[in-house]
Image (tube, rainbow, N blue to C red; front, side):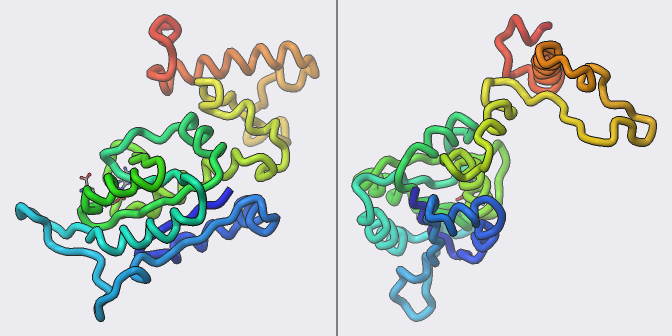
Length: 233
Ligand code: SAM
């Protein structure tokens, strides 16, 4: 998979050279490049923002550098998916991550200030599939942190990135439930005992216990994830 990111702070993405995604890049499974939006400006001050039409507080990102950036990066593949992180977008979920992990070329456009001139989204749709995606119902200062979170969630689903693919199967949100609790050695720590069932060696009983724990946790922490009947217990 190829991922291009456009930002006025491309060094945010240096962090993605670490750990599993760093190894995936070294192995050629993932090609990730962060680009400076100011590289597509042509004035002395490398201006990327201006005052909003109609008045109001804050600045808006100008369409011209965005248009040039998208033109250049979208030309690298047939029909890329162009993602603009936005608190006004569809909610990012594990399902979104799975959909995006199956694609060949993603371009992320990180907004700042009050956001990007609306015409950029319309124009981008002529070059690829456009998605405005929100990390959650809160407002960040810019799209960089949201993009990093999305790339990490997407990247770990690309085959070969996580060493043992089985570890992905039982994770929270994979089957609509939260994950069961996990324990490791020692079996007693500060007077707290690992549940006996996990020491029983009986795999069927352990699997049933874990399943019940998944429902229990989801019911108490995230009842919104369950169908109405199950949520009531
Ligand atoms: N004026 C915008 C609004 O009210 O919808 C918020 C702009 S925000 C200060 C600047 C940038 O941060 C946005 O363009 C977007 O790229 C990013 N951003 C902020 N909150 C986000 C969220 N919850 N999810 C994804 N991106 C977000």
